[in-house]
Length: 477
Image (cartoon, rainbow, N blue to C red; front, side, top):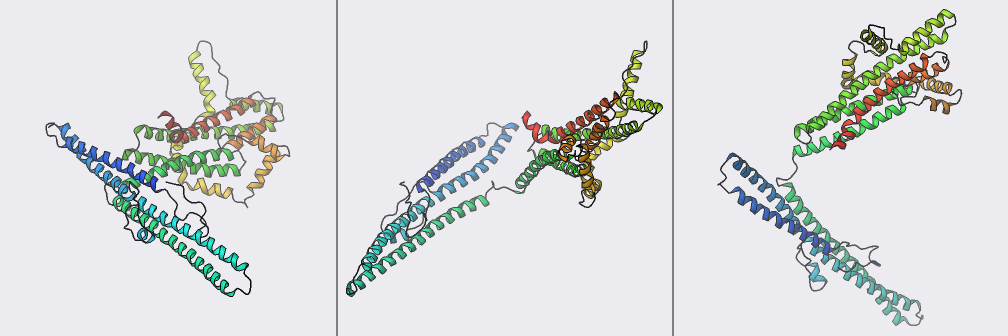
């Protein structure tokens, strides 16, 4: 097909009937070719399904499935066949003049589009010719002397006639658009009719599966980003911890939604047991991470209390007791008694790990929190109250950051930043700053490192749990 005209003055600003009928017809031929191949496969399947010599259970099942597939292929054939008919497989030219093209019988979209373009192109040629005649008449009128009244009337009639011809050309453009639009409507209606009434139309469960997949994918992404956001703000004293609590609860809720979606998809056959295993493992790891956070939080609070008391010690006896408490908080060194090495080693290990023991029921409570935290009023109510602009917490948080920066808020923010668990990040930083005043106690550095290490392990386990299904699972596919 030759290129479409670019200049549509004086009847349109741009091509009123864009498109390429030849390319439409080429697509129609591709659809027809696919329909013919489907028809061939249908004949083959029918021939196979009608063979009775394979008279076994497997043969009967095969024939039953073949017949079912034949119905699906026949529905697909009808779709492709209808689409090919609607678009057309070749461009059929309509001879004659404007009236012949205008009143020609509609056929397919490619041919009718071509017919509309031919009308529009002829209208453009007529309009340009009329525009030239109109301009010539107007220029003659502008140079006409006052005494030539007879010529003036004739030229005015020529100008008006040219204007009428331009208006007629514009009307032809309107009719060409109508031909094109009617052809598009017929093709659309034909496709809609066959799609809406065949066996390939998506049913309730198809739409349900799509909905579950969309919700599950969104929840996976939301859980990851909400968890990252909670870690990003958890270091801020008071208000950051409250905001991290809300974000963490939402992240856990999103993880639960993602897991439920995975369970549904496994039941529906859209995912396998491996996907379900990763989802369950992710929840379990979040529970383990919460247990680590409990231990780190309890240890941080106890250690901070011990360090504050040590900082207030003045007498020799007070300093001695403070040193013992700090050593205990830091964890006793392994001491192996001669002749009783194994029992001594076990006893030393028990004492060293004493600060990190879970209280009775903490383990089960941590696992339950994965399911209860997103629906707990504590996760939102207390934290949202702490975030109230009139609570005074923002001023307190600012003052704490300024103090840590020795008067400089920017420096204090840098010193306060941490990726530790949001629930204990601020306490861990307080331990760091408290340690500056207790540098003469050897246990202080160990306390700070141990507290941070336990918390970071918890954060790592929790983060892997949140990211396991959506980010790590695909790497193993």
